[in-house]
Structures are given as C-alpha cells and as structure tokens.
Length: 251
Image 1 (cartoon, rainbow, N blue to C red):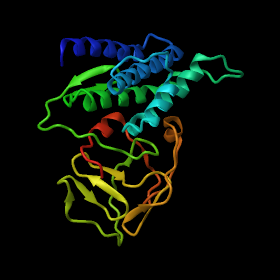
Image 2: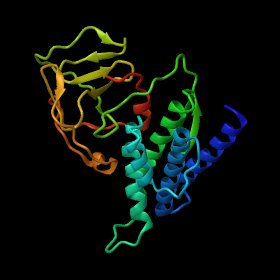
Image 3: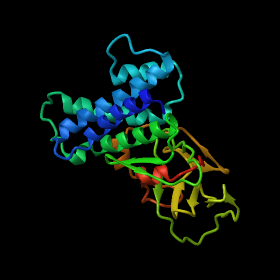
C-alpha cells in the first residue's frame, strides 16, 4: 500500500471502529453504520470513475449507480440495503416507533463486518486481515483465502451442524477441493469446520442433481427470522461472519 492508501484506509478503519463504540446509543451506532457504508461506496465509486462524486450521494444513489454500471458487486448489495434500511429508520421520527435497541440494529452491525472484510480482501488484497466487531485480527495464512460467493438471496449461506442420518441418499466419497463432502441431497459438509451448508438459494429446491426454481430475496433482518425446511432439516440458520470467512470456495 502507498502512503496515501495507508492514510485513506486509516480513515476508513476509524469510521469502522466508531460503529462498535459500546458507549454510543444504538440509534447513533445505526447511523454510524450508514456513514461507514457510504465511505465504502464512495471508494468504490472513485475506483470506477477515477474521480470523486460531483454531488452528495446517498446509499440508494450509490446502489443505483453500481447496478446501472453492472459492476460485479452483487455480493455486498444486501449488506448495504440492510444498513440503509435500519439507518433510515433510526434517523427519522417514527409514529409509534419500535424502540431502537442493540438487538434491533445487530443486522446492520453484522453487515458492517461483512463489508469491511470484503473490502480488505477483495480491494486491498489483505487476506491476512480479519475484522470482527470493531477489532482487527492478523492471521498467518498458508495461502490466500479466495472470496466465497454465497447465495444472492441472502448473501450469506445457511448452515447447520451436520448430523448422522441413515438414509438412501447418495453420499460422495470424493471430496470437492479436498475439503467438502457432497451429501447427495443439495448440501455439502465442510470436513475442516464440521459445518453443513446448503447448495441452493432460499426458494430453490434440489432436483435431479441441481438447484431449480426461483430464488427468494430478502434483507438481513428478515433472513435472521427465516424458518425453512431443506434436505430433511428444519434448523438452518444464517452463517456468522467468522463461518462465512472460513469458506475458500464457491460450492
């Protein structure tokens, strides 16, 4: 990184850390989430246009710009939209408003972690950095971690601890990428972390060896409350940031 890049990232990191100031009120932290997301979007805009925006841009205008340009940023759209929605709610007067609590803004806090880790790995090529809840950790990696591209419907895979289940489903004895076992039912098991992952998007079904049907779109907040049945299991959940970042390949 150049000196200018180091200074620019220091400003971004300061904005990131402000989100996780436990002394701040939840509504203020929600608005800090939005400021951080705007900072990420502005940097992406500058990388594409080679100049600063000519006018003040909101998260919505950034998203519209990225989509119109068909930039390969679909991975981060749900995170930005989650931050936008919760930030807008916290920043405006509401009739019979729901109290802004730490639990209420948790989806935005998690989305900030996803954005930060995506940015440093994808744009800065720093695979040895991991950001979790305002703290930067440096890791010793034997090889670079490639970005995992999760399901567009949630932008985070649904996972669950694997269980032993005797049935007639075909289970492959050959590992995918020397790490993932195909369970033959639309799920794979990561033998390194012992986690089971869905291969299909929410709304799709596993038929004839592939995912079929229309994916269901939703924001992070709704995804946290989702209850689904897939491959005979009904205890799926959204992955944590650590579990998401542990994935090296798109399955």
